[in-house]
Image (cartoon, rainbow, N blue to C red; front, top):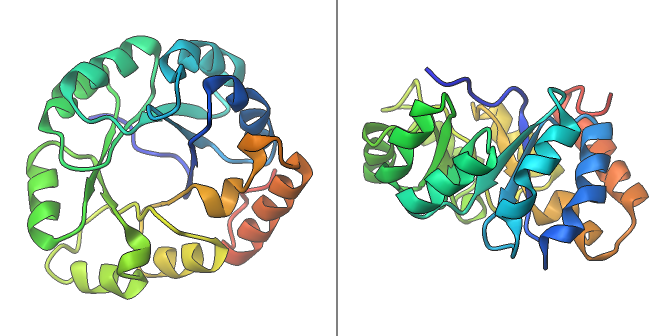
Length: 208
């Protein structure tokens, strides 16, 4: 069984190009974020996964997101991804990931999709778009699915993260509200401030 995300925050990096990743990854790791998703919508992502993984060592895990088919899943795994994230249900991603001992966070929203994702090999289910339904939705989902390991994603800031975790989420996936403009030359100090506020909001030791 693959190991699943270690911490309660998965930082999602969607950049104009992969050469923007490094300083933001360094700031996230220094701030205590231990799960970092690099998206395939960013040009050049697969070219830098291995190097970034070597740079962070065992301190954090570098995963690859926006995996939409089995070919991309295998390419991400070959590049060194330590977890995969799909925007929807991608059955073809599960087998190669599990062969590598790598977990898959598979996107779903409705109860039927949650069941299909689980049956398709998802280790965790990404509730997306989370901002469209709110944390109370997870409370309702956990009625028929008490063992659901949910990772809400989409439009989640510090306050929303707290609410989703209180509703039983295994982790929260945070992109723009956490990263801000850091991937476009924005202040890394401001990013660190956002991480600190996040740690205060969710009561987690996100900042080391």
